Length: 272
Length: 253
Image (tube, rainbow over all chains, first blue to last red; front, top):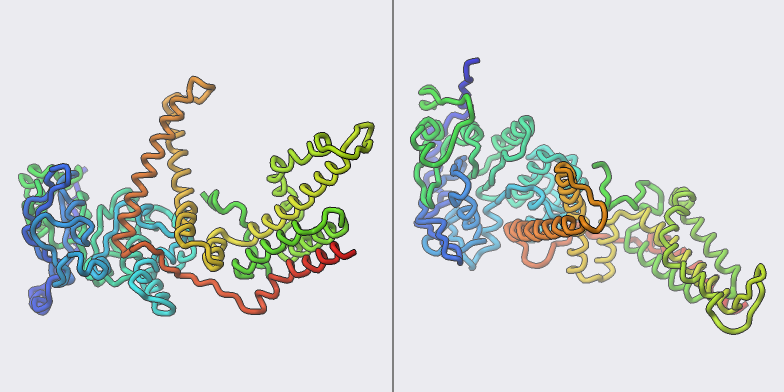
């Protein structure tokens, strides 16, 4: 059997679109971010990158590369030892944590951690209600978020009675409800069966929001994100077109990243 | 999975009793129990009337009598001691089937049994017609501190998750040939319990992280405000008010 070469379904944004959006502040701007845990273990050694509004970017890296540590800086759960993080121009800091947490929607890996309210609807309502929304406006936000992930009919169900894939989609809805500037997905494809994986990809593609996808699922990154970054040893080791990075076998090997058996990117994909 | 373990007391339905706001039902049950307890034990007919009142509610709620009776069994361990009263109480004695029993003790047994059974029956009806979530909202509406309501909500949400984890650990143990048989195996079970505790504790930390990420600052915003109209209140309070009339008659007659 000849190994299949996956198509790149995504064409990168045209230069015109980028130019139109160049005047807006980037959704996410991280500069010289460094962080050491209290026990002295240094996880980040000066991370630099910008993500423009509307981009979908994959953050690749093996387990232990500091991906989760980086994510927890984006909404101020961890505070940088040095360097800054700005979300749509607003610096992450004590002064406006509430606003930052509304702007940065983090979807954690285990939906059972993310969905903590007794029913789906209440869970989706949690974020906007914490931000002060009430009554019809709150109901609207909940309905829109659930509709965006195709779970509109499940509002009154307890999360435990949903399938894993449905729970993951509801978890996405819980952060969409606050209309975030940027959606941060931590290992979105983990534990999903192929159909749920595709359904989630459809949902992510349909959203009009900046996405940072943290993953070591390389085909999923290729499918959804035109741009990718590799986090290795606490710095951004590579940043470029996903197809290019994944075709660079040396880069992948250095950072303990591997395409699944049978995958090989050809120049055709590199061009994409 | 189907209906979770946490919700097995609830019996789905669309009766007028189901439709009442939870806080009116909670108030009604509490008031009913207080009235029943305040009734003199010698007014035997009053307790029959109370039972009839509850029967009417059960009928309106379309709760089958069999279900109600089966669930009454939970009170058995609690009233078992009441059966001892006629043997241990002092005072005037009477012969029942050749056994000398204390008259006062017999009344005591009757008192505990009748009032206990009525209280449990009222609670069973409440649980069967009100969803767990509704009960919590009702309690919050009635002024239970929000922190307690939060803790109880998390118990409902994560009870199933933890039970599931426990089940997987048991399957993993048994798959490796372990079967708990007697005291010698308690060590293994204890270590499993410890592991389960640590897992749950770490989950708690992750959940907290997720909550903080979504703007949690110590209070869970109340999304579903429960409200009751005057008609709903009067409908719910019909039970304790009728009981009160019976109780007053019991004291005066």
